Picture 1 (cartoon, rainbow, N blue to C red):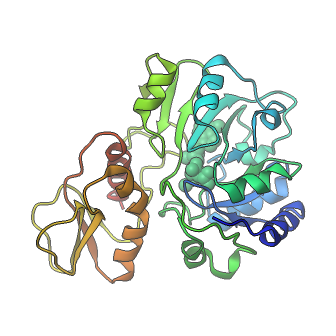
Picture 2 (picture 1 turned 180 degrees about the vertical axis):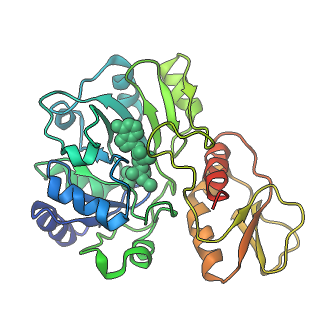
Length: 310
Ligand code: TXA
Ligand code: MG
């Protein structure tokens, strides 16, 4: 995608003035603000209607900039070298001298950090004098935005500026790993756990049970398109859309496919857009067929399970 420097300049101007802007990343769009500023971070929580005890992810350009705020370790460095910039978020210990706003972290001494790969986000981060706090650009508990139009649908005029970056290529949020001691996955996402495991070459525990809330952000009801979702459905109801992993021979107007051939990565990329589309097409609920529970299929099932708690 071509970078429009004028647009980036405008976003920079607003961020420098402690305003919030929506920014594109390769996972999903984010609502961004100066992570060193209490004022900017408060605005983010207000815009999203997000509980203050749910801390924000902090976005950095590179390691050099992160060193001011966090203690690093060898497991982190291994993953950083292999996957960053990219769709992975690390939980690290914060340095005492860190300047990150206590509003962003809810006074925790840990920090969730990420290095987005999207060229627009990278260009922005490179020339700012502070890291960016940016949760996903959606109203709290709803599905994330993967285009600027999605952000507009959710926030309308409430958001001062939406930095255009095309469609997010990954389509779901980053994978979160607590890397302080024994590596622990806190959220399945845009990077498969299997390949993280290969690089670390040690056991990784997965702690994402949607029936148990461990981190404040692991709210049970999440990623909701705003209408009920039923899982592993065999028989659909009247006025219900059917969401399938793969195109079927028989095609009906209420059938929606995540991928033509059942490719799980493509299905992940399409998931939020199709859920939004079904709502726009006025269906009253969504029935979901079985989705293979492997690789990215695990991420899709995780999101749909949480969305089904609506
Ligand atoms: O892909 C992504 O990660 C996107 C893009 C915009 O970067 N961001 C995103 O942010 O998904 P958000 O706020 O929607 O999800 C971040 C999650 C929340 O569930 C939050 O509770 C958790 O990260 N989190 C933040 N700081 C944490 C911390 N110190 N310890 C544990 N979890 C934390
Ligand atoms: Mg979110």
